[in-house]
Length: 243
Image (cartoon, rainbow, N blue to C red):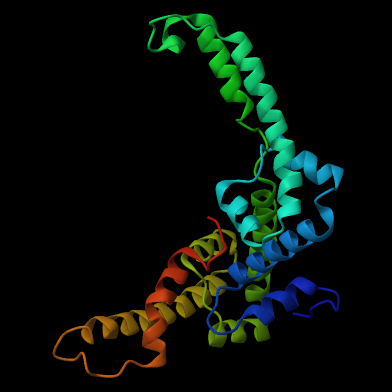
């Protein structure tokens, strides 16, 4: 395969094949971090971005806290003042609509008009738009997966680097298999995965063995010390990836 000089995805994926990290996870996580950096630095006042946030009723729990972890009180004040202004308006409307009855414990269950008001109030917060960051993550993931499959099918150098330095997490392994069209590429991907999961299992078994009182004084290798963390990473993806 002859890679186009401007095919940046090829080089991004290839450069991410190192230290047995899942390259799809690495690149998505990097893209999310870069987006959040740009959002907080220069885009929080962008009218379209603020509209997208408001239309989606804010970010999902996961990405809201990831954004918060980057700091920037001013940017958060701008984002959440928009959302809370809308919330205050909806609460005002709700309180004007509902009727409270003395001695009735569950007024929503008694009066039909109150049930309608509650539904309208709740429906306001059910967005038809996805979390804006989740939506971008899906687009990035699809692009990287389709490109990875193409390179595994056609590029010898990419395949060799995957064998020596790559290791897919379980979710991205399955997503790649869904898009592989060539049997040999499927066999190569799964052979690499199988070999590396066997090695990881051996390290985990050593952790268990050396936790036995009879062997507790045996030193742990550097690989054994982090194998339990790698096991989590390979099962669900690296920290920062929502699936």
